[in-house]
Length: 142
Image 1 (cartoon, rainbow, N blue to C red):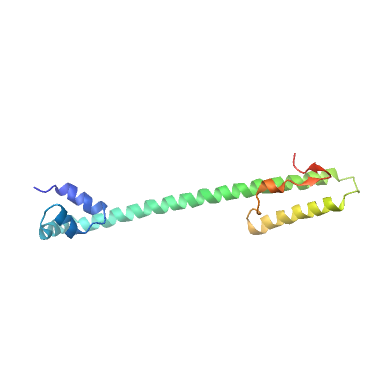
Image 2 (spheres, rainbow, N blue to C red):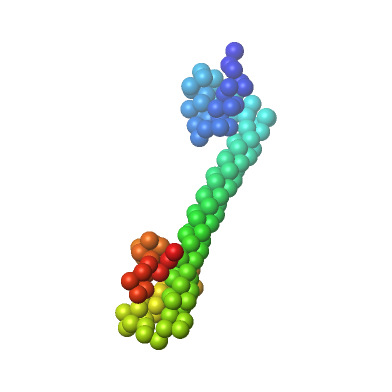
C-alpha cells in the first residue's frame, strides 16, 4: 500500500513531476493523477510555492532595508565628522584673521564634500577615516 501522505508531501514540496513520482513510488500514474485531482494537490503545490516565494521576497526586502539603514547610518556618521571639522575650524579662526591658504583650502574641500553628501546621499570614497582634516597643524575632529 502506497504512503499517500508522503507521496503528496513530496509532490507539493518539490518540483518532481507526477509521472516521475508515480514511477518512484511504484504507483500507477493514472491512479496518482486521479487522487491528486480529487484532493487538490496542484492547488496545494501552487499555494506552497507562492508561500515560499513570498517568504523569500520578505527576506530580500528585509536585507535591502537593513543595508540601506547601514548606508544611511554611515553617511550620517561621515556627515557628523565633517560638520565637527567645519565647526571646530570656525571656532579656532573666529577671531584669527591669519587663516592660511592651506587651511582655507581644507575648509573649502570639507564643505564641498558635505555638499556632495547632501546632493547625492552617498558617502564619499574612502569613508569617514579619510575625512579627518587637519587645520593649523591640529586634527579637525576632537
